[in-house]
Amino acid sequence: MSEEKKIDFNRLMTVGEVSKRSGVAVSTIHFYEAKGLLKSTRTNGNQRRFSAITLRYIGLIKVAQRVGIPLEEVKDALSFYPVGSKLTATQWKELSEQWRAKLDERIQRLTRLRDEMDWCIGCGCLSLTECPLRNPDDILGQDGVGARILERP
Ligand code: FES
Image 1 (tube, rainbow, N blue to C red):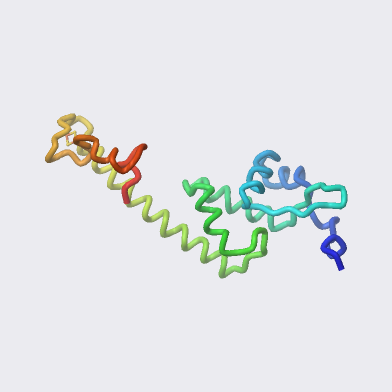
Image 2: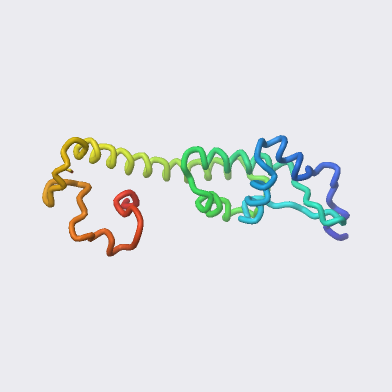
């Protein structure tokens, strides 16, 4: 029996229906699919159809983005499971715990930066020995381009 015959397309949603129910633009759904975060099935007419679990995945992606987790990290976390699979409560909990650790790490980093900024705002000395944000001789630049202080662990 082919995959087409096993699928009840009446139970699946069009991309427009997914967009309406999730509040996410059609183009964003296509983008998530292209990134491998969502999976659709094709009808005989080559139209996309999405299962109901897609809405849960979109919810997960939106929550992750809201707390600052980049799409690549969402993709990495989801890569342990088949794309679009129905995750168990245990698997959702695993994802949550994984991101909780990452959020804790980010909170610690931001707290340290905030404290360093508190120290430096109004000071302006840029002391080679005292200032935590000072970057003498562009030492951090040797590690690459970008905001290196913000990226340190
Ligand atoms: S600017 Fe003075 S300690 Fe950073």
